[in-house]
Image (cartoon, rainbow, N blue to C red; front, side, top):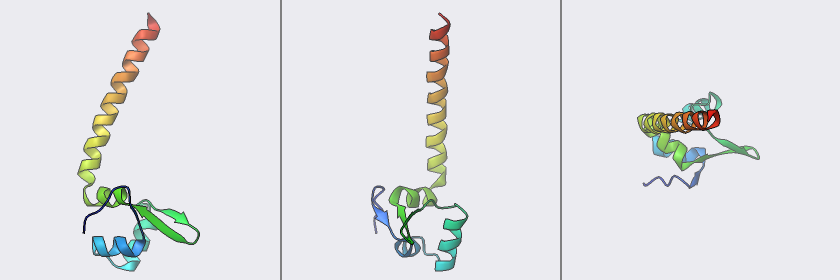
Length: 83
């Protein structure tokens, strides 16, 4: 099954995809290991969150690149404001 990063999944669908038990799914949501939005009394999980769980290294790489770029932009802002 292909995971669409913009699709919304139920916890049961995520359980099947990650091959984990219902109790593990609940524990992961409550501890914040997987981000979920509560809609009424039910949770919903974005596909990109599932992809992050499967490939946390990819998220780390993207985060590092983003932070380097952000630092570079802020450094230029400070230099320009001093002139």
